[in-house]
Structures are given as structure tokens and as C-alpha cells.
Image (cartoon, rainbow, N blue to C red; front, side):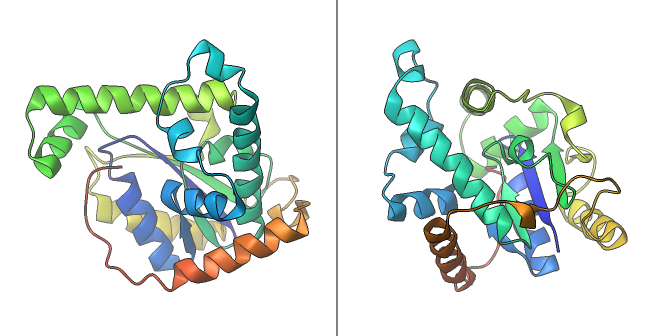
Length: 227
């Protein structure tokens, strides 16, 4: 009974690892696409645009943007409250760091390795891949640091850090699964459980229904490098 957050960079294989780990543990898996679906069906339609671009000065003080980010945080907390879930990205490591039954994992890889993976995955040139990687890194860092005020590069925020330019992704899944079974997904401290979170009833019901729908998605896990 725990929540696992996966923080990763483009080309690190973090998405593949997160999905495989969730499958291994029998957990739900929630990423940007699924959070976006939860938010859109609840009435917030602009999350994708907000997350995937670096905000201008005017956008940083835009009330709709602020309201959307606030609701994003509420959705992540509601997903965590349902327990037994792997949450990929979206600053979830910072939002959930105050809870004992949350394990924060960072999946990384050397930039050169990530660039080569994107080159092969998208069949593009090295310069094109490097530009995509750098731009994506900037967008993710800006989102976490500007909107959530978390230090994206602070390694102390994470319980485990694995480098897939050294450790094969499937071995990462195996190690993480073993670590979970040893710790039972809990930190040995007096922080509260995610079950103590106070979630608005309508939102909790909506998130629960969406998680049920996601479980029906039986599409195979592809060993793609994109996230």
C-alpha cells in the first residue's frame, strides 16, 4: 500500500520503467496524458498547453493558469489518496514528500545517451535530437520550479536515483520492485499517510472512476525512449 512517484527526463526511459513497475506491483499508472484526461473531463481543458510551454511574464500572473496549476495539484493529491499508484512527473515528488507511504524515484541518464535514444526513436539527426532534449528539459524544469516552487535538481528530494545510461531499464524495474517489497513502500518516520489527505468528495469520485477506466487499457508496454 503505497504511492511511487517517478521523476524523469526525456530519453531516460523513465516512462517505460514507471509503467513496467506499476504492472509488476499491480498498481495503477498515472502520467501526464492520464492526468490531462482527468482534468479535461472535470472541465479544465488547457493543461497540455500550460505544461508543455515555458510561460511568459504575463502568463505567470494569469489567473486561469494559476487556477489550473492549483487544480493539477489537487488532482495529484486525489490520485495519491486512492493509493497503490505510480505517478509519473508533474512535480508529484514535491507535492507528496510530506507523506510516509510515498517513495520518490528519479530516473536519469547522461545527455549523450538520451540524445542517441531520441535520434533512434524518432529517426532524426543528432542536432535535432539534442535540441529536443534541451528544450524538453527546460520546459519540465521551468514548470516544476516556476509553478510549483520545487527545486527540480535537488537530489535530496528523492529516495532512489537510477541512471539508465549505466543500469538497463529492465534491471531498474527489478531493483525497484525488490526495494518496494523490502520497504513495503513506507519510510521509517512519523510523517502521515496519504490516506490522511482531505479530498473533495466529487473530485475523489471522479478520479476513482477515471482510474477504473484506465485499468481497462490493456495496450502493451513499448520500450520507447521518449520519456
